Length: 487
Image (cartoon, rainbow, N blue to C red; front, side, top):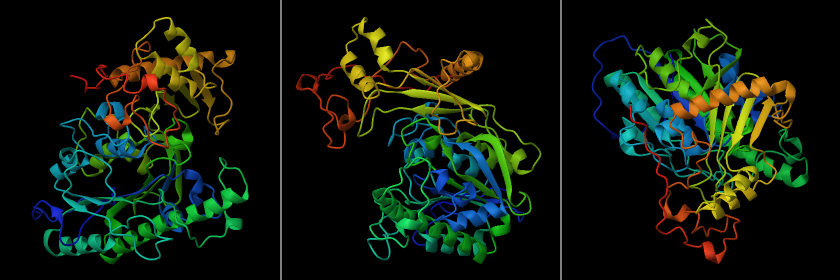
């Protein structure tokens, strides 16, 4: 029984007509709450002693905490698209931020509707096109309520979900899947806070100084705002006697500190599941799971066989305590074209329980080899590489002994066999995903929106001093447009 919390509207709904369920035995509901840009290290259930998220801490006591849950890309739109489609970014098509999945892509909306579920988006969307995500009901976020210096983002429409639960109980009694997607704690962060800078517990990625503490006190308020929204939704479930038949999943789309990267601080996300009467209270697992596994798990719990073309597999056996392992490997994607701060520096990663291998494809080392080929777009490749002059082509980390990923073992003779195995497995995955990096000698410039094209960037946040000779120099250039793999 898995529950997803999403945006459900009261009246008026953006929805198709709700048909009455055919039978009286209702399968479990799903509620997934998605925080925006938040690392594991901020949560009490992952060791923070001064947490701003007591509701999540309580959920952890009532359910199972996953130590090794991973998204496939540390960017909002791509992470959510993966969660909803059960496919990694290159497979579903959304591998640059703010981009759509491929035409004809099916998602949780299609699969659970086929199983007679209402599939509801409550709050933030950040996925497209509508044809790929045809929610039964879309509950748009409300305007920020309260002090504008403390509540800076759109608010979760809990009252709309309340109205849906009441109407559904009275008339349809259909199972539901709610994707409740918060706008917090993503910036703009509050200017006022109820937290003291002195009381903040900083994460391992931060320097302890006055400026950081004051900033983190405001960020803690944003975390609390999200946690309060989550608490209100759980209270709404309880009000309508839905808690016992709803599996609640709490996640963040990616880490704040590792955004845009393929390090654990961006990809390893908080993940907590409560399933009353099934999941043992206070349980923890270090099994590897991926966002691609969430959709097949939901379908498995709903009694529907997942399609064979999904990248993930059901982790229901973990929830039932029938096993303590799941995936052998999880994977990660980094693509920095198509964003405001655009540049060419793609990377891919593969991670086992203990080791992580990273391949960076446009390093200074690689540019030295490409210079001899005199490729037409070498100037843009060089600019991308020179942003990271000290990043090597290969990185290998023992993530158990070195969780901050600081000691690169790629050149260590004692770890060459491990590196070779992970490198081979990663290449096999690139081919299966039809990744444009499967031929490591290729380094395409990707087709993007005109405003994010490498030769026209002028946004002040870019930090790129583009020479006049390169401005609009790619007019007529044949950009690479990634297409879905033909079966």
